[in-house]
Amino acid sequence: MGETTVITRATSKSKSLRTTIPMGIVKQFNLSEGDKLNWEIRAEGGELIIVVKPLKVREEKE
Image (cartoon, rainbow, N blue to C red; front, side, top):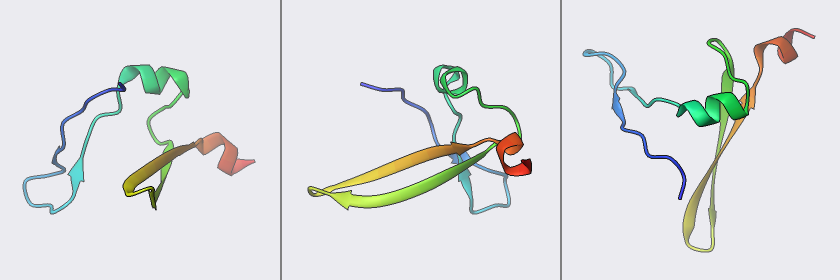
């Protein structure tokens, strides 16, 4: 069932949190530093569903 990551504080002074993208996902979507991720959150059947779609930097420049 999927990958597990740990959420950590972005910086010691920040309220933001971050996690690491598992290497299998990085390779599957050919992600690189600077690429963006679009996060969509919705409720379905009593569950919270989070859909993350990669937005490649080179696609935005075209």
